[in-house]
Length: 354
Image 1: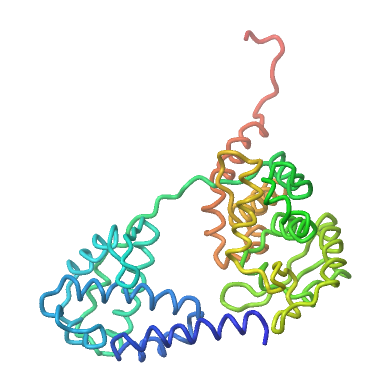
Image 2 (image 1 turned 90 degrees about the vertical axis):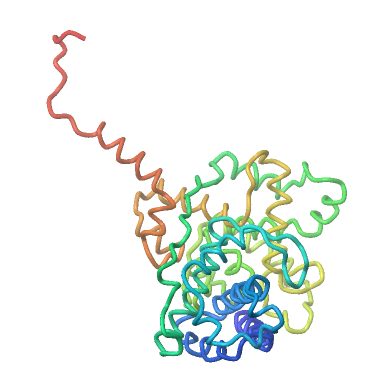
């Protein structure tokens, strides 16, 4: 079974676990949205709806002596837009029902949670299981775009030099670095040289690399396959790592994985995040660098060199080019400003006064 099939299986089983303690009508809802959503999306919706139902149990007198499974469609029918706005206020700071830890949500977290609630109400209303849809009257929190944090050309070189040498790492980190240098350099070079997502990176198998065409086959969000091409630096780093990789005997179930941990298992997303953090904190300074920031660095470099926003969107796997355009709006504005320098209406007259 491939990494992506395993991930689908894990997400599906986890969703079933969550639904076992939630209102029965949700089973119909999740079956209904299955054809148009990915397993990861449905799992995210289930977690956010779980928070919503905990909110109802904690704040509604009529539900205080009931379990989550006992919440009915009649209870939902009694809710109005104001109740859902209270939910958005509630999730700003709240105590997690399972962990008893204080949790917080900013603009993006609130938008994601109300999206899950809106999807549920929309489905139940369209199936005539609810008399109205109060969620459509609730405004989604405005998400303020943040400046793109990315590495410039010099910083990319400094980061890769550190991955290769490990000079700025702690003594303990240097011990691990010696054993994993070719793997880490291949992984970081691949992320910086292709702009793939960290989930796409950890899902790679050895068989997904095509050195004849300098391409890798990845599975995008939503399950679609794509081929992304790489340059000579990525090719060299991957070739060097594969010589070491061939000497490792992976644990059962991880035989095909490209990037392995020291435990001889497929690297996880969290492992790669920690790896990027370790190297970047050693040399980059104030910038908080994550795998996604490496992706942004690639996208910025590609757009700067090509000027083709559609090419950037295609290579990064954005379904909507407007998503790409929003991310690189500042660069587009800079290009428009430069347009004023390219066109002259009249040649300068050397005899005219300054």
